Length: 106
Image 1 (tube, rainbow, N blue to C red):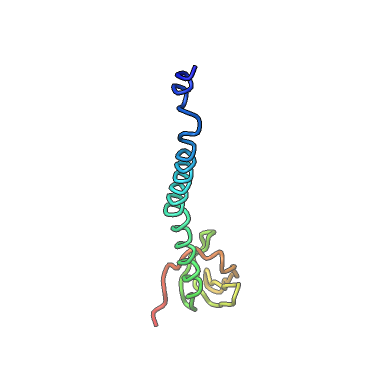
Image 2: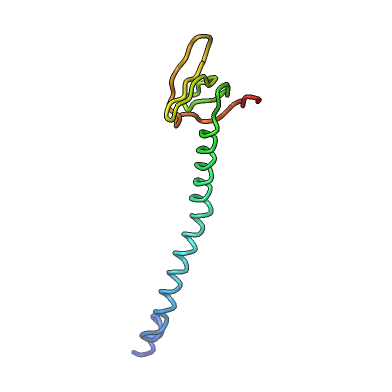
């Protein structure tokens, strides 16, 4: 009967601490992988977007998340006014600016 216990998983009390330690190591390894593959790049992208939105100037040509191209004619904290055609202006939330297509030269 004792031989069967050894064959089914070893003596009682052996390997329990090692098994728990290995589970913690695996959990930490998965977290590190998620951090470097998902969390860190997303934080970097958000930082770049915030920097881009903070550096908007009059005359920049931007692209909205809806696909509109327009020239910046007015700026406030929350709203950007774009001229999308001659004498056609629209107001867009700063958060809906996807990219700067062309910066103005100073």
